[in-house]
Length: 261
Image (cartoon, rainbow, N blue to C red; front, side, top):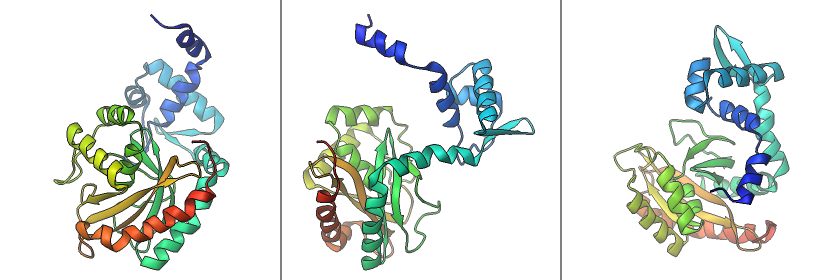
């Protein structure tokens, strides 16, 4: 039976707003244009509810209709930039990411955890090391990325296990670890050693190493990584080559980031 707090939470929840946001999240690089039925299926809504949400988004300028298919408009970027503008991390981390990348001549990035994915909030790319373009706001699965595993390892173990269990855990390459028990063991190792190395689990030829970024109170608020090509550095060599640089940036950033523990 729901508790009084659960009932209060249900009363406070605006279902229409939730449905509208779920409709926006239906669109991505593989689903640029969608019909009402496709949106209903992806958002798990009735066709009538999906249609009303799409018409509302169209009326507000967040979506447009073209040939029976809906697509998002640039106005949606206001929602994402509202986060960037109201959060100190992107502006604080970007100069350090730029500096580190310039010193080692490799691509560097910083990200935060959002559910089962990481979201890039700072990036400096010296060369294209992936087949997909990565920029601010780009998302990647947490289970097979060095920054994702660092951020998952920083969670309470039970919460980390819940997120891994709920994630699709797609195998992007023959090297991708997808078994829940194996991933939980890897996270335990990451907690103990304080960094994570990925060897071609997201894309063949891509290797990376990441460390957590802590605020002044010691809480993990982001992750910092260095990504390179396996033809340049073997994954096993990344700690000896780059870990000291990442740890130095980690130390420099900690007193600069405010926030509760």
